[in-house]
Image (tube, one colour):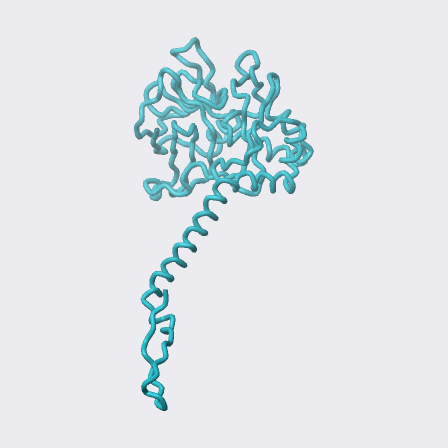
Length: 283
């Protein structure tokens, strides 16, 4: 439909000429503008939906082409799905470990990780909260039931697990944060996170959520409640609860205390901790 206005021809006033309105004066202009806006919105929506649907697979394809760790895991048939997953801010893929394997043996089987073995072992252990020497479905204490683990594809990215800054610790020289849900221990200095360690907390006898402080430290310690079980490099945080070295299999497995890797327990005991340092437990 078009709209017209009357135009007058001076030499022949009795004649009339119908001329179309300029587009900007037409009553259809707002409608046409709305139509163009709707088309743009629909196109944008389709683009977003396409990214959501196809983004992960396209990202995985990029990883397959460009990341040697991804290629090697794919060639070995270790990946559960091949999907790249964000774990604590780090791109990872989930892999399957067979019974008898360890994180160490996994790392040694991948040429791209073998040349940076120590970093790779520590990073995979940190993300999966499992010591790199624990045997999958092994016998005795040196074992874990976890047979699916995340392997980082980029070791230049630091995992963001606990808060980098803790306001209540800002005025403390040192501070301990125990996160029972995530199963991590954070060491803070003047509110800034300096170290993050995996833990294994209690199963049936969970530690109560509370504020605490280190009351005393015992280099060689045995449990008074559980058959003199070794709890070396122990930090007493109240009652029968301690932070001490032990098996950290990737899930809560202690009688109630906080277990940490032996190396981390020694660092705490000899280099970082002292009586009087405060902390809190969150869930």
